[in-house]
Length: 119
Image 1 (cartoon, rainbow, N blue to C red):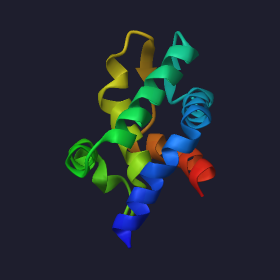
Image 2 (image 1 turned 90 degrees about the horizontal axis):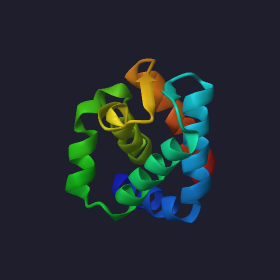
Image 3 (image 1 turned 45 degrees about the vertical axis):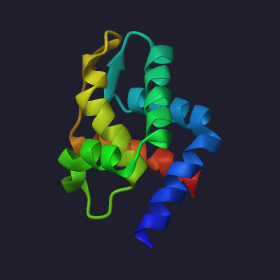
C-alpha cells in the first residue's frame, strides 16, 4: 500500500542518512543545481533535513510537500520533502550562492540518489 511504502522509505533513511545526504549534496553541486561556498555545510543542512523528515508526522510532511506535489504523478515522499527544503529553505542559507534549474530537475536529481540508497 501507499502508506506502507511511505513508512518504509522514511524508516530506511535512518540507516543511510550520512551517505545519502553526502550523495544528494554532491549531485546538486555536480549538476550545477546548487552553487555553494561550502559543500560540507550544504551536506550538513541536507542531513538535518533528512533527520527532521525521519521524525516528522504525516501532517508536517504533507504540509512541506504540498506546494510541490505537481512535480510528478507518483512522487517519492522523501525526495519531495528534500526538494521542498532545497527550494524553500536552503536558498536562504548563507553558504548557498544560488539555486538553478526547475523544480523538476532538482527533484529528479535528489530522487535518483534517494532511489539508489533506498531500493
